[in-house]
Amino acid sequence: MGDDPFKSKEDRLGIFIRKLLSHSRLSTDDQQAIASLPFSLRRLEPNEYILREGDLAKVCPVLLSGFAYRQKTSADGGRQIVALKIPGDALDFQSLYVDIADHNLQALTPVELAVFAQKDFEALVAPRPNIARAIIVDILIEGSISREWLLNIGRRNALGRLAHLLCELYYRVQQIALEEVGAFEFPLTQEQLADLLGLTPVHINRTIKILEKEGAVKRVSRRLTIGDVDTLRRIADFSDVYLHRTLDSLV
Amino acid sequence: MGDDPFKSKEDRLGIFIRKLLSHSRLSTDDQQAIASLPFSLRRLEPNEYILREGDLAKVCPVLLSGFAYRQKTSADGGRQIVALKIPGDALDFQSLYVDIADHNLQALTPVELAVFAQKDFEALVAPRPNIARAIIVDILIEGSISREWLLNIGRRNALGRLAHLLCELYYRVQQIALEEVGAFEFPLTQEQLADLLGLTPVHINRTIKILEKEGAVKRVSRRLTIGDVDTLRRIADFSDVYLHRTLDSLV
DNA sequence: AGGGCGAAGCAACATGGGTTAAGTCGAAAC
DNA sequence: GTTTCGACTTAACCCATGTTGCTTCGCCCT
Image (cartoon, rainbow over the protein chains, first blue to last red):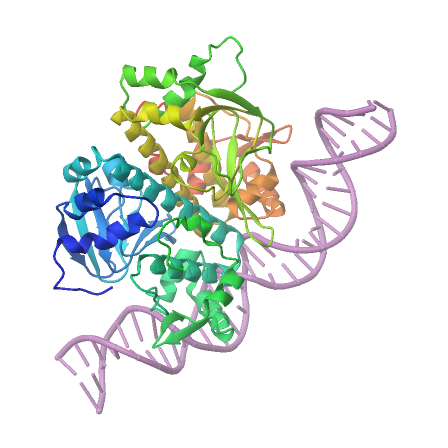
């Protein structure tokens, strides 16, 4: 997930292409066209805003490295993380098509973004129906994940919710990885986990301890790591169909 | 919302066009093209399935009258309603683009659907970039509503959740109505409200009583009706930006 | 090495919402 | 008009999760 200064600028988009290929077929010509799309590189520190609620950005950022999240707040100060984005994910088709941002988009870890200009993006998509299609599929899958999160927060208890999230992230990281990754460091603080799962930090702490006792999860220097995916899947009642990984699946 | 036997078949798509016009600009030519799209009419009774999890339908249904909902279940039998659709809403672009349905789609009231065949739909969209754009915007707005629901279920208490849902439905119904509608009958049972808001029927009942005492809500023959929108908005901390009603707003 | 600080850990207590179990109501069926 | 059935109502009790407040850890800074 780190920085590779020896990679050419074009190659940096490889992860974005790999993500699209996980659910859509693209000709080598299409892939070539994406790879040579001009972009500007932006680096942000944790918690910096990529996009603010109310913004009118006409730009399409794609996450090259690091994690990011979407977040909304209610009037009484409650915060809800409504989406989690990993490398390869496009962060905001919405501002290309709709007027005004309805949520905040922030860096979770240090991130690198490829930012496409609207006109370049439209010039890419217009004559290439397969790419246009892949974009729509990408948007639809994000919607599918939101629906699964609704089920998770609305109907599962704290233990199930946390286990489900861990499973999802595990599968999604596998999906973009070049080789099988075993355990990886989970980048959310307990407070962020609480804001994501509709719980409080204190209760997240209790719940992690239970998962740890079951051997489902390990902790190395305060960072969460998957211990046993099968146990997690059992606890979470996890099925990956909602991720719609139809092609090139590793797992 | 009822049936009008004197309407020509083409005119029946008027509500779908009006919905698209509420967020996108379409030329009269584009509108004409949509209106003359061939479709088959389907009628379903409450709780009948429009689409089942696991289905591979290659078809695009649009709701002409009545209400419908998307629903998922967890292994322990918990049910979560993850979206509510009203007349004019397209119900399933996803099955045109993605492989397999990840949720169930059911009629809430008696409904009438216009069902488009994939090839007709693609022939409509391919040469008309403005329509393609309107479809994408429609999909993105559904995503925005899902995110707001995540905030609602994850961070608001029962009273706020219910008030917020009532507000949302009020605004959405205004949006497709030809003239100002005042109160309208709310079509969900208390059990369905519970499944939608991540609560239990018993607690929905308690919560309705509070809203009723505040004058925010009335009940006529066991059906919920909006009493005072402003009170509801205050209780729910409601803002309509997430609905992205940019054009032709009535309210 | 010490100080500062954000995150994690933890215990005691409070409560919103869940659960269970009885009703009651209203409309459709006959 | 009686039966039936689903939806609504209500009460009593319970528990998962929230709240408060304090302590500890690990790491960065100087």
